[in-house]
Length: 196
Image (cartoon, rainbow, N blue to C red; front, side):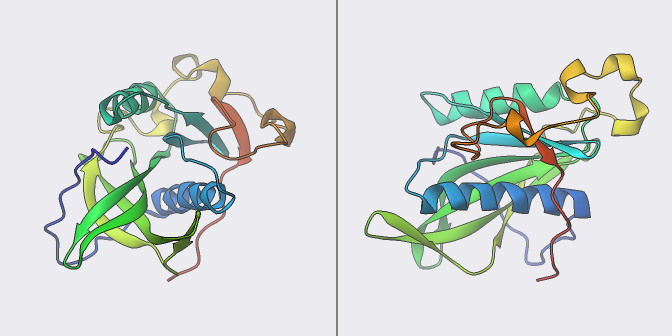
């Protein structure tokens, strides 16, 4: 899905809301795990709804198809607190083109989202990732037109996001990575990230 362009003219890294940082880092870790096991990344979204995290894949023949499907999913996620859209791509750097696994996301009502990612190089058939994620730049926010999660009445929120209890078995045990869950609850929302 390397056909997406995210502009970065910022010289300072903006503050990232904690819930957004958590879901972006979670998505990146899921993608890194899949790639280090030799798997391909099917673009996916991670939606934080209450204390739960929902993963949904967005396969497509083109980057535009994946992007449009992810946008459709997130724009309809009334009651969600944040999202990440994760995919394998590349960035242009001063040293040239670099491979990167990217997570872009946002929170309800904000005009812009943001993207972070892990640069990597291939050693044989497996990627070797940088130690820390890099800020990539502003990105579209698919939640720009949504209200805060608590501003929705329960009947406005999709039923799949309202269940109180989730079992880990909802995600297939043989492949708990992002491509395995098609809108399946993945369990509790990720814990806060350590300060880097």
